[in-house]
Image 1 (cartoon, rainbow, N blue to C red):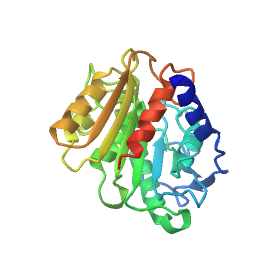
Image 2 (cartoon, helix red, strand yellow):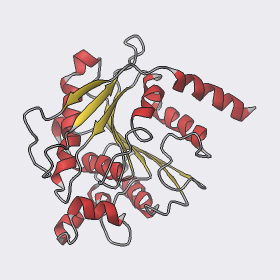
Image 3 (tube, helix red, strand yellow):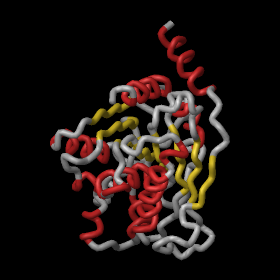
Image 4 (cartoon, rainbow, N blue to C red):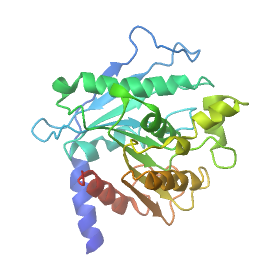
Length: 271
């Protein structure tokens, strides 16, 4: 009976039709930093809730893919009904691949947050309630922005699914590290983008979800990040599910999908 109720509640939420997205090119005059691929454009897909339901909250979503490709549906577009049903705007970021130029995706993500705030009146968004969400390597991008960005590019909260956090050997996801920093990065760069080392009391509140049997990105990434959040008295919650591996995203085939969605919904309602 309990599981039937969960299924009903979440099905109703996810059946809420997301509006056709607004698509914007983030760098109409060309990006600050080139990745060497002129055809790799940065775009945002803006999914807005019905105006009557809009809470003013917005989330910039960074899909994963090892900084090599993007899982735009499972870790991006398909989340729109869930958030729109709660009156939350979802902005899915199609960021550029770094090809070893680490500034590229970070500049894209920070500009996405700035653009959301610049369109606050048009999109019915509260500038002080803009979060960032990321999956896997997109979780590294999201946590990088959450720990490094300042001013109008700094998010108010972060949601991380099975994130890459560290660039340290033995902890990181090697493909993500190589694609972001290159094959032989300098020690200074490794430290700079090992995000567990850059948490302060000003880091935004955090939701983390992952599976204990993740063989692609070691759970140590999330554990170390949570430990530092706790040490710095940053409000944080972490959900470790017994199984599910890596990359489950919003798939209902994930055994703990409905529990995860209810826990995320409850967390979003807590502040």
